[in-house]
Length: 108
Image (tube, rainbow, N blue to C red):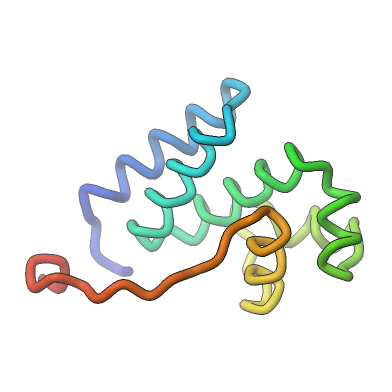
C-alpha cells in the first residue's frame, strides 16, 4: 500500500468526480472497486460515505445498529473506522468483501 500504482490515480480520479457530480449506483460501485483495488483507504472511506448518504445515513445506521453521528464521522475520507464497521456498512449497502488471489503481475 505504500507503493504508487496505476490504480491509485484511477481511484483518485473517480473519487474526485464523485465529489463534483451526483453519481449513479454503478459509478459509485466502480469507484469503490477501483479504490479497493488501489488500497486507498481515504478514497474507500470517502466513497463509502457518499454511498451511505445516497442510501440515507439514518437507514444505514438503523440496519447496522450504529449511531448516525458516528457513521458520519467514520464514513468520510481520512477516517479509520473499525473493520467490523466497514463490513456492516458494506452489507447494509448491499455489498460484501471477497478475497481474490493476486496474479504474479499484481505482487510486483
